[in-house]
Length: 318
Ligand SMILES: Nc1ncnc2c1ncn2[C@@H]1O[C@H](COP(=O)(O)OP(=O)(O)OP(=O)(O)O)[C@@H](O)[C@H]1O
Ligand SMILES: [Mg+2]
Image 1 (spheres, rainbow, N blue to C red):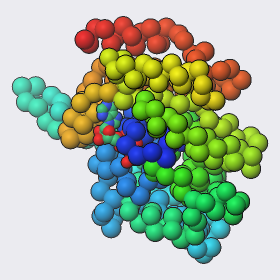
Image 2 (cartoon, rainbow, N blue to C red):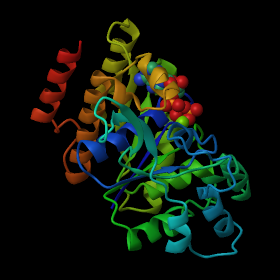
Image 3 (cartoon, rainbow, N blue to C red):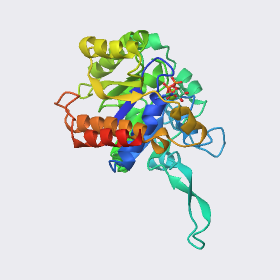
Image 4 (tube, rainbow, N blue to C red):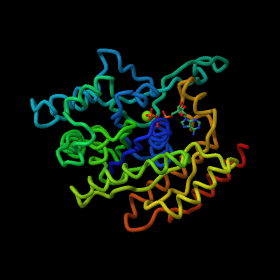
C-alpha cells in the first residue's frame, strides 16, 4: 500500500481537484485500488463526491481521530474504520434494458473510496494542542494518522494507493498527513511567483518529517496546475522552477479551464467531462505510478507511449 499526500500551505491552488482526479485516474485508467482520505475540515473533497458530511448519519475521520488525540484509545479498530469508508457515486444516464427508447438514472461509483471529513476536524486539530510553530520546537505529534488509521489500513485492507488531501496550512493536520505519506508528498502549485516561493517552508516541514523517519520518501515532486502556456508569466515561472527549485518538477502541466467549475456544479469530476483534462491527469497519474515504482529514478523518466497517447487524445478533442 503506497501512501501519498497532496499539499501546499497556500489556498486555492488546486490541491483538492488534483487529489480527486489523481484518484480517479489511478483507479479508472490504471486499475488501482484507491482510497482518498479527506484531511481538510472544509471537507471539499467529500462534498465534491456528494457525501453529506453535515448529516449525523455520515461517519467522518474526525470521529476516528478524536479519541486518539484525547488518549481515550490507542488505536483505530478495523470495524470502526470500515464505518468511515464510503464508495462515492455519480448519477449516470443509461438506456433502460426493458425499453431501449427510454433512459434511466443509475448511481455509478467513481471507482475509488473515501474517508470523509467534517468541520469538526478543525476542533480535533485544535485538540491536537498544536500551533504550527510548535512543530519547529519538536513538540508536535506527527504520527496520529500514520500510527492509527494508516496502520490499520495496512493490516486489513488491500488498497494499492491511499491519497490524502490536506488543508491550506502547515498545522497539525498537514504535518500528520505529510508524516503518513511515506511514499511521497506531492506539492501542487499555480505559477504565481509568490506561491512557488512560499513553498519553501512547506519543503522545510517535509524535511523535518523525513528526519523523524528515514524511510520517508520526502517530496515526490511539484505539480503545476492552473497552467496556461499563453500566459508569459507561467512560462517564465515554469523555467525558473525547473532551474532553481530544489525539488523535482512533474512533466505534466494541468491546464486552467472553466470546465473544473462546470464539473463541480454538475457533480462530476473534470476528467469525466473534459478529454484534455482527463489526458493531463492520466499523464500525471502515470508519472506518480512510475515514481512510486522506481524510487531511485528522477521524476521525468516516465516518458512513454502512455503520455504520447494522452497527447493524441488531447489533439483529437480540440
Ligand atoms: N485546473 C483548473 N482550472 C480552473 N479552475 C480550477 C482548476 N483547478 C481548480 N480550480 C478552481 O480553483 C478553486 C480551488 O480549487 P481547489 O479546491 O482544488 O483548490 P485547493 O487548493 O484544494 O483549495 P483549498 O486551499 O481551499 O483547499 C476551485 O474553485 C476550483 O474550481
Ligand atoms: Mg482543498
